[in-house]
Image (cartoon, rainbow, N blue to C red; front, side, top):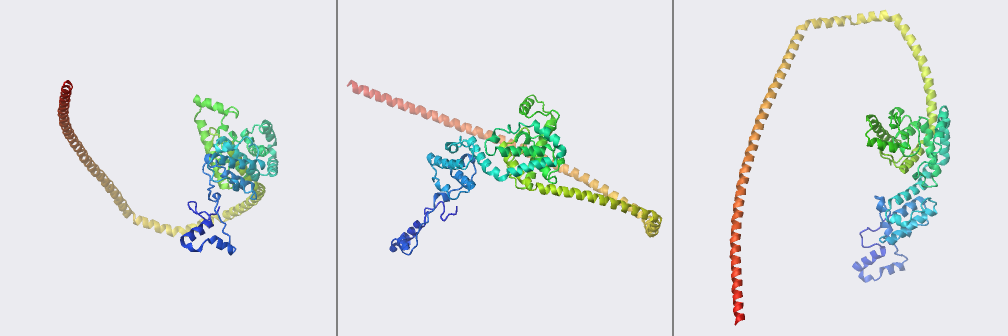
Length: 506
């Protein structure tokens, strides 16, 4: 919000500004607010606490507890400017009751907007920073507002049909794959179906991934283990943009190993394998390839644009978070479907044009080769004779020059060899001199070091003896002082006791 006054200022309204000015500089004018009202000017601006509030979110565990930022998120998503949800907040939200009120108002607006599966989320969960409930609330909001804004169900269904239609040769393979994964839609995972409104959209998104990846013989069963090796994302981008990501760049993963485990028991088998140290070098290389595939997919999505960078580098041992993967695949699907028809049309036109160009080019090459060969066959002798006449005089001049300068060349070669020998001898001498100097410096430093250590030893011994004798003298003096003091005290006490005894006896 735009502010007229600073956050740290003592004055927060225009009335206070005028009153302060009149009190300090116009004390004889009376009430200036009343004077301004007589001429039809009303001083009414007052800076509210909500205008000074910082809506930046840096930590989900603490920044949503007061409910102000959550209300602003809801207000932006619902686009309801008339209700002014932020204006209903209690500011400053210091007490727990104020925070519960703010969060409760935001949750009621979300329920009224039709956000599903938030009935078990209450205000105290957000105020107390209950992480699973807060993440569930944010995922429900994203699934309700963002997924449907990113993807159109009708376009997605048409795209799935177009993918199947474009791969008729693989229809039997796709049918066999779909019968194998007929129950995949029900096991998409518990977290993927937290939002009932987005259930069909998540299923369609999974079917789209299955349809595209099945064209390359890759099975997609869910949004976690199937996308962990990065190969599924690479295949999705390769299908629509082969020029951005070639299939040869996709590296083999653990699925390509002969002893690959099934998805249901993969995690259990991996833990047993780690415990018994049976992962060999081949499996480690496959895990590295999976991390490279994941990093390459993130890089290509960044180059493609329109897909937020929300995924870390993953592999089969580090499975990605399902909700983040669903959202990333949704953005990727929307981005790829924008250009799918244009890409397919361009590919067909390019294929036909290249075929035509290859035919025309082949005919032209054959014709050109036959013409060149016939011309060369008829003019070969004449060409060699012309070349011989052309370069004969030059060759003779070069030969005469070489014969005349033969002795000079040998002399130059001998001089060059002598220079090389001199330089090598100089290098040997330099090495010997440097070795002598370094040895001399080392011996000097060593003698200095030993002399310094010896001096330090004698000085420390002298200091220790001196300190010991000083402490001994001080200790002896203290003993003497204590003896005299105790003798004085005992004598004084004895005299006092004697005096008291005499006094009592008398």
